[in-house]
Length: 302
Image (cartoon, rainbow, N blue to C red; front, side, top):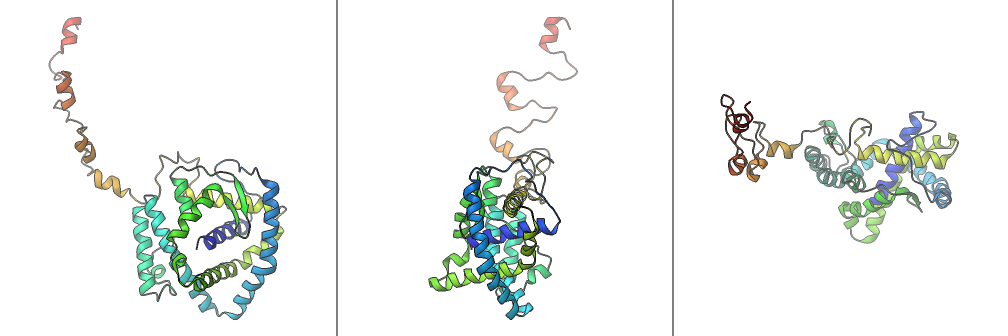
C-alpha cells in the first residue's frame, strides 16, 4: 500500500546510508528546501517516539515468534503485490523492457511462486525493481517541492506525497474487501518491513542529529531513484536514457537504415545525396550537380 511503500523507502534509504558509514549526507541534486523545519522537527520527534514505543516492540515480537522461512515468505508476498505498482510506473516512465520484466516477475511469482511466497522469478534472474508514481512525476519533470514530515507516515516532499495518490490506486491491497481485511494486510506489511529494518534502525541513534540525517537520507534516496542511480553531473537528465535498456520506441520508428519512418510520414525524409529533395524542388532551390557551376557562380564570375 502507499503508506507502507513510503515507510519502506524512508527507512531503507536511511539504513543504506547508515550502513555505508556516512557521517553526513548530501543530496545529489542541489540543496534541500526545508522551509518548515520547526514543524518538521516536532512531527519527526512524535513519529520517532511512536516508532520507538509501538512499532519497534511489535516488530521485535513478530521476529521472535516467526520462523525465518515464514518471515521470508511473507516478505516475498508483499513484494510480489508491490510489483503491480512497479510495472505500471516503469511503463509510464518509458522503461518498456523493465516493465515487461516486472510483469513477468508478477506472473511467475503469483503462479509458480504460490501467490508470491516463493521468489521463483528471482531464482530465474528476474531482478526486483523499485518504482512508484512519485518517481514517475520526477521523470516527467514535476518539481520536487519543499520537504515536510507527515504525522505517522514520516518524510515526504510535495512531489512524493502527491505520488502516494497514484500508488494508492495501483496497489491491489487498496481494493481488498472487507475493510478490516484490507487494513489487516496493510498492518502486516508495516510490521514485516519494520522487522526487516530493525538492525539498521538501531544505528540511527549514533548520528549527531537524527532529524537532519533522516531528512538528507530520504531526499538523497528519492533523487537517486528518479535519476536511476546516475549522478546529475554525468549528463543532462533530460538527454540521458531513462534506463539501461534500448529505447524500444526508437527501434520501432527507426529501422537503422538512415531514414526515420516518422520523418517519412511527415514528408521530412532526407533525400539521397544524388537526388534533390521535395522541398528544394518546390522552392526552386535544387542544388546543382557537383560537376556543373550553379547560377550564382556564373553571375559572380566564380
